Image (cartoon, rainbow, N blue to C red; front, side, top):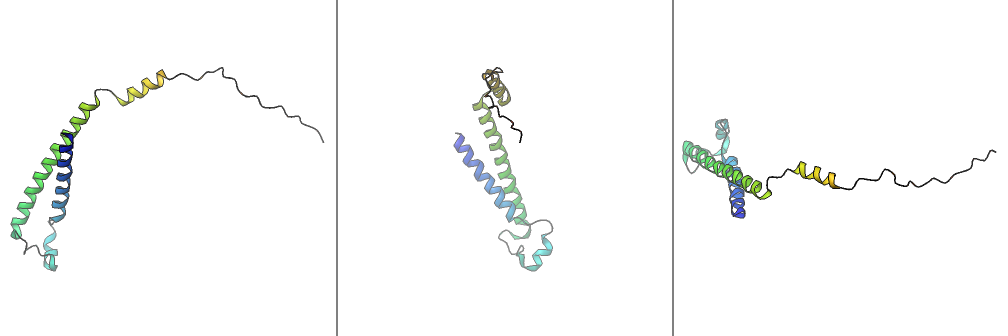
Length: 114
């Protein structure tokens, strides 16, 4: 089930990216006169923005829903533990280093006067 939601999530993300890149901004009227071709599009001048914005909204809703679903699935699978608490428990149960450990002695060197 999680893999299906992940595939839908990736497809929705690609759809949002593609639709946002295809849309013209509000300042595209000046660019349209230099050969952008917005007036000769498949949906006409206003139909393109209406269809594209609605399709983008649908893909964004799908992306948002799958994001929440994947987050819920991940939290449900992981349990209710905390990463910080788990690390603290591991450090508490680890054996402490002995303070009375034998330190290697440095060999004594003689200072010979010249």
